Length: 122
Image (cartoon, rainbow, N blue to C red; front, top):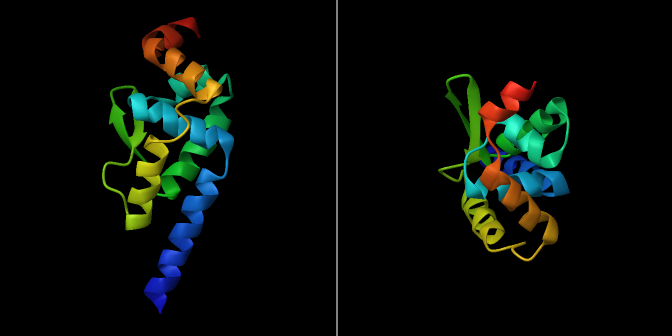
C-alpha cells in the first residue's frame, strides 16, 4: 500500500511540473543541451529566483538533473527516468510542440546563448 501512495505522489508531482508553460519551455530548451540558470533566464527574460523555482519543481518531479561545471550548475533532462510514466512523458514531450512558435524562438536563442558573455555583462 505504501508503495502505491509513493507512486501516486510522484505521479502527481510529475503532472504538476508539466502543468506550467514556462516549465514546458525549459524542458524543450534542455532537449537541445544542458543549460545553467543564467542561460535559461536569458532565454525566458525572467528573474533568477523565478527560473530557479521552476528548475527546483522540475527536479523534484524527477524530470531534470543538475551537475556542477566550475562556476555554474548545468541542468539537463534526467538521464534515467524514475518510473515508466516519467519515461513515457519525456518521450512524448520530445515529439511534442515542435511547431510551436515560442518553442522555435527559444531554440534559436538557446543555440547562441553563452554563459560567459552573460556573466561579463553583469
